Image 1 (spheres, rainbow, N blue to C red):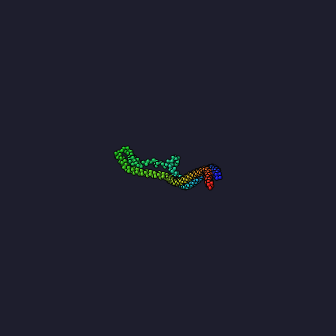
Image 2: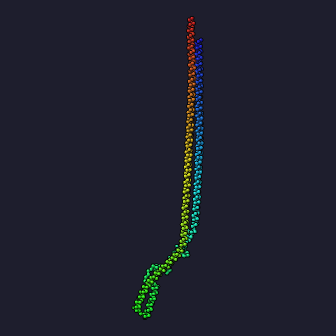
Image 3: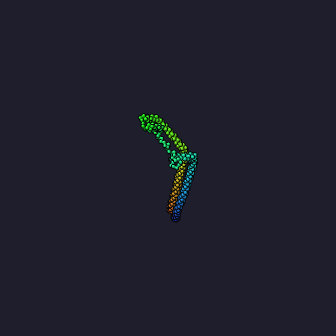
Length: 424
């Protein structure tokens, strides 16, 4: 009976062990399949996550490009507006400077014209006041030149009359300087008359005597001649001197009359000429004053115009310098903004690529970890199934062994009992 029971137990143990082993293997296969499916699902999810990361990266890059393009447009528009504003301001400043220059030059030209007109009016008035004297002087000079025979107008009345030398018709003034001599004495009218009368007396006396001249008569004639020469020399000399003095006086009177007439003829003309000369000198002085004043006015105009142009040049130069500085600053800011924009874009792209890489790395890391976990789970499940199956078999074997031992013990006990009972 105990043997049968033990056999039954062994058979039951084997059956239970096989069934437990099959169940453990089936559970292990189910876990392996689930682990493999979990790995596939993890890979699919990783691929979807990577695709999403790529799409997100593309969106980030597109958004960054759009942002960069907008910033570039705004910066370019700002630059253009700034440059236009500076150009408009420069044009306005230059137009204002040009208008101020025009007004300054116009004002200086107006002042110059007023000064020149006033000075010209004064000059014309002075010329007008002196013109009659100048005309009279010119007429006097023309008449005097006619009288002096210097004008070339030979048909003018009295042409050259004032240029004739003084002379007395039939008288040689050089004779006033002759010395009294025998010839002069012989030519003296008183002496010649008395000599002639005495000679006549002698000749009558001689004729009365029959034409004979005695020694006494000749002596008387000689004595008469000597006495006449002695007596009449002084008288002739005195008459010679008186005649020369009279001639000199008359010549001097004639010369004085000639000179007075010449002076009376030319003096008024010379006075007119002097008046005209003074008038001409006055006009020349007025012209000189006008020229000097006009020159000063023109110099003042030139200096003022030069200063106005200098100010205009300085102003336009300052405008150009400011415009250049503003343009340089605007371009510098534009370049700096472009650099910052591109730097920000580069940083943003680098961050996006870095985030993308990090996320992809994390996804691949997670997916790898999940795959490893799935493989490990599958391996663990397979190992667990195998271990469970082995445990079931081991448990069956142990049960069978235990049952055998128990049966063996029971058998031995029964045998011992039987022996004991039989002995009893």
